[in-house]
Amino acid sequence: MKRESKRNSFSGTIGFVLAAAGSAVGLGNIWRFPYLAAKDGGGLFLVIYLILALTFGFTLLSTEIAIGRKTKQSPLTAYEKIHPRWKPLGVIACLVPVIIMPYYCAIGGWVLKYFIAYLTGSGSHAAQDDYFTGFITSNIEPIIMMFIFLFAVAFIIYRGVNRGIEKSSQIIMPILLVLVIIIAVFSLTISHTDADGVTRTGLEGFKVYVIPNFKGLTVKSFFTVLVDAMGQLFFSLSVAMGIMVAYGSYVKDDANLMKSINQIEIFDTSVAFLAGVMIIPAVFTFMGMSGMEASGPSLMFVSLPKVFAAMGKIGNIVGCLFFAMVLFAAITSAMSVMEAVVSSFMDEFHMSRKKAVTVEGIIALIAGVVVCLGYNVMYFELTLPNGATAQILDIMDYISNNILMPIVAIGTCILIGWIVKPKTVIDEVEKSGCKFSRKSLYIIMIKGIAPILLIVLFLKSAGILTWI
Image (cartoon, rainbow, N blue to C red):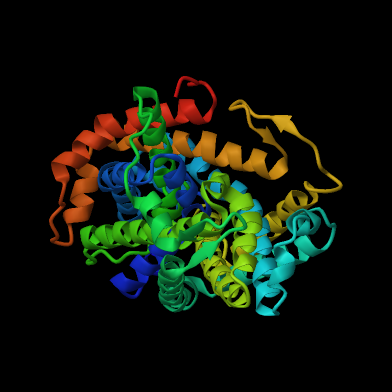
């Protein structure tokens, strides 16, 4: 108990909300959300995503933050404190960020490389066909960039909850939001005439994004949109990674938890929507509907540089602002991933923060080097259960995102919904005197609907459910 009394906490609600929102606003919002929206009928995907955010996402987010604040523990030890026999779930929840951190830092190094390229006026080189492949397949440069990114994140975490996470989030998140808005507005104002004389505008691309497209919609395709939106929301809100449990443990008992959760939902959903406004109109304007087929790294590191190059002289400036925004988003997300591990080491093994950061930093560095070398000297390919061709980074991503995270989320729903009962979370939320809005909805979701949706997502992600 003495150790818990010394536990750091966020100095105020705004610090917690910005830190949690920073965790939620990551690469998934920027390179996956726009692609899924374009693929899944634009406005149809947006409507389903919003409904799920207010129900499914709200349930998981509320549960994990409440578990953290109630136990004042990190994910590795929090579940055991909720119920003595459920420590294995905490071990899995801690294992997720351990796996994610190395490859997230590798990708963060890629973002840093592109930001430097545009900052130094070399953005036109980034649009060349072999630029991205040439970079990631080189032996040394990706490792250097990964190390710089990892060091910056580790330094912030080393400084602690108040001076590190909270202070950094209060600086980075407002800048990130301003950059997102600036680029989104610019994306709506552009136009381009291609070699065939066809003129497309950003506003036309915006219509593609927001107007529901029901053409060819069937029961099967509707379920595909539902699973896509659920999967995106699942990863977007940073649930089932132990992150929100760790951040929740730093929230003061007198804080209005319900208000904070609502603000995190709004922030994350708004930035995810604006990511689509940034990217889809610009890609549509310069590449047409064919440009919408790219997602993930190919969208960010191949397609978008070509779009910036097509903009002419202003493209380098827009590219610089864009990759600055992406870099900020990557840093805030990586901060939360590392803190989930560091806080777990501190609680379970009674390490100092300095030692926990050092240990996790070494683990992430070694594994991160392996990830980087996975594109050259350690390159190999295998087929995942879902049919995708993968190498080291993809395998780590598949294990963490498609297997372990759904298991953590399903286990959390069973633990709270049926073992210790929803009242455990409801009482924690309401102990500061605030009202638990959507209480009846929460009980229905945590006991029945959420675990069913998660099982469907898990079976789909694992390649077992193939008809969707």
